[in-house]
Length: 212
Image (cartoon, rainbow, N blue to C red; front, side):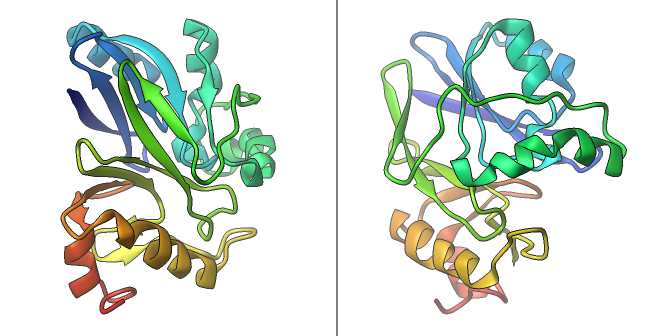
């Protein structure tokens, strides 16, 4: 079985998730924005072996700790989509602008595209390209767990910002309605910030995409 545990990291309280296979104890970390020692302590406490870094997008609060973590443990970096290359290139400037610890540059071991999959132990998650918040944003979906790790595409009661460079509101709405909703109303999503919710609840009550 797959399990996950979410830890808010950085001053932005970004939801970093540890996902693991209970048979192999292999783990992946989604969006290690910072607080690397805290993440490693959690992994150690649970007896997990971190094997991969998965990125939804390359904003500083989601990707700021990626280079350090990858170098320390010699880990592959999976994602995001190539559309976020310019955000990766700008991580040092982002860290200065928002008062984060210096963020190193990195090159993803593997870029992700819509329809790709990622594998952890004997388990497979689907990848959907969901641009709008950033052009290279991806989402990780586990039909087995009925969970979707959606980064900053959708929140409980809100949606991702589109006023950053290359953000696009129409694209974001299309990503939510065309890529997320088909995963099912009962799917629980883990957003980049704030509490979990379900797609069904957001389709009913979210002021930005309710009724879609």
